[in-house]
Image (tube, protein in one colour):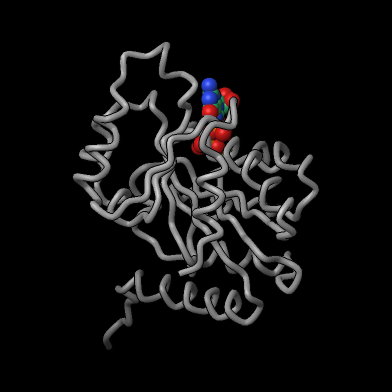
Length: 217
Ligand SMILES: Nc1nc2c(ncn2[C@@H]2O[C@H](COP(=O)(O)OP(=O)(O)OP(=O)(O)O)[C@@H](O)[C@H]2O)c(=O)[nH]1
Ligand SMILES: [Mg+2]
């Protein structure tokens, strides 16, 4: 007797993502999947971005992806918005947020009361790029401390994303880096990428990034 084996993992994950998408459409939730290496500044960027969206009357929420801990969720607590921590450790410690995890997290939100939902993916420049979660847009944060070559070495992430936040710009005077090389290498990988040089410490560039988030289509 043949043993049925589910081989197409992507088929499963895409089915969950499609269900998530249906819910987002039903409730008019705009969803942004934020990805990067560990420590590039995703959580800090969210803590600066969300107040600017709130000022414009938008209700925000966050799914915080991490292998373990609630540290990032706790950092967002002062924003006073719904945050759900999505840890992968209980499910085997995946190195990316999966669509099934997003689906589970969504049960904890009142989606009708949310305009913009951010998914902070697990810090990892490789695997998260492979999975559609049902989001509207993917964005990558690349900090200028990581090296100009990263878009060339981790191309899928940069191909999949529509925007790249070039973060920690305040550190440029202290580093031996060439910002133009960062931009060139990003564009070599994805000629259509919108690039936003940003410092979450000084606020430089955050408004332009927020405008991109607000842009329709
Ligand atoms: N100088 C400077 N430091 C920053 C900036 N953004 C973040 N940091 C610092 O970089 C470190 C990591 O920032 P996080 O926001 O935790 O990075 P993350 O991408 O969320 O990290 P993971 O969730 O662990 O992947 C922290 O010490 C931040 O204070 C920035 O714009 N400038
Ligand atoms: Mg974080």
